[in-house]
Length: 537
Figure 1 (cartoon, rainbow, N blue to C red):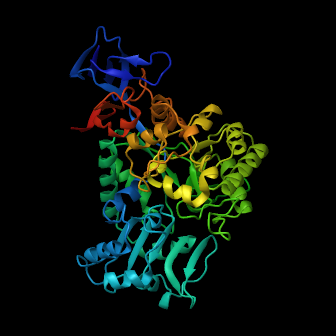
Figure 2 (figure 1 turned 30 degrees about the horizontal axis):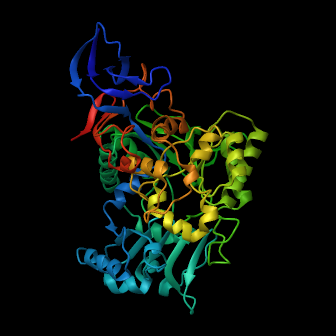
């Protein structure tokens, strides 16, 4: 039998129980047709891996590909500790633009600037009358300048209050520029007039970064959204075009935001896209995943909905973007319509609302479905047990520990932080847990995220919920088997076995043998999707 390619002399971690280690595999038409037993096979291409460690293609279960690509083209404020440097970078970008062009910047973190946020007036002085939007690293709040608010319809910074959001004001009642959650939507809408060509460029930029990190599959947690910097109804068309033209190299599962769904002439309460589209439509390159709901805010932005107030802010228990009743009605409707539902819930108060809604939905109409809670950040032992009992998949981000752990410790204190971004507890409860980064909130490098799941150290070196540490093999399992399971794709990706898609990564070092403190240094040397090399160095 003749096959397309044989890959030999490797140390393959297969992710399977039957044959955990292998040394060779054969590929035909993009799928694995033999593992180790290559007798009688001839190949058009034979690749000698020289004893390198090879793992299944890595899968980020929560990766905003479009937004990652757009942010790669914005002013980068990551790591800044001084407001003056922030304003200086805005001024430098403004000098490159026409008088009416938008200045867009991202990744600022007030936790690194003694709790200070930029202001509309400060941005005004830096950008010379141009509209400007400065996005927080979390993506859950922005700072808009005076001109940006004018273009959104609010002259003299008279931005109105908006349910599900927060407008920060000065003593005269004018907006300071800081807008949280839904309050940011009007300015985001005003700034998001991007062309299909720009979306395609962004997708291509982010795709190239992803495969350079060994990511062969991604789950995009939100397209077709209103009120965001970049996502529009044209996103799905752009994804189809990008996949068809090879500009997106990883396999994609995309989630439509629930605001895009609407009732059809169908059983009462059902909601869907046109033609009754729901979770699972698509092929091996591009599929429709769960419907996405955002229930609360961000932890580092102190807008996640919590039961106990944030440290030093006795009035602040975060924001529910949907009331408990609204969330329950929406989730039940999508559940009945055949959707899996992925709900963003970071605070413990929001998590309770989601679990309540799932419990009611399953009682009203029991069915086998993998509903998800994106982030599942502040979670009690009781919530972990309840999540497992309901069959809900938690989707935490390991990399948040090193990126934001110090700020989280300051925001909610060490006691609550001990139950934040858990992993060990979730596995011990019997759940199959995926790996993810929430790129571009954090960098998409999966080895950094795995490093944090194993070591659980903040940027300053402080321990962060050390009881939640896992082994490197468990972290790798999350980024392969776990993430495939989270979108119902474990029959196709996540493991290396006969019949699976030929997606794998050749590593620079043996990930399973490096010291724990060096996991983040491992790199993808070669990334293969469907038997074709899409990245190498």
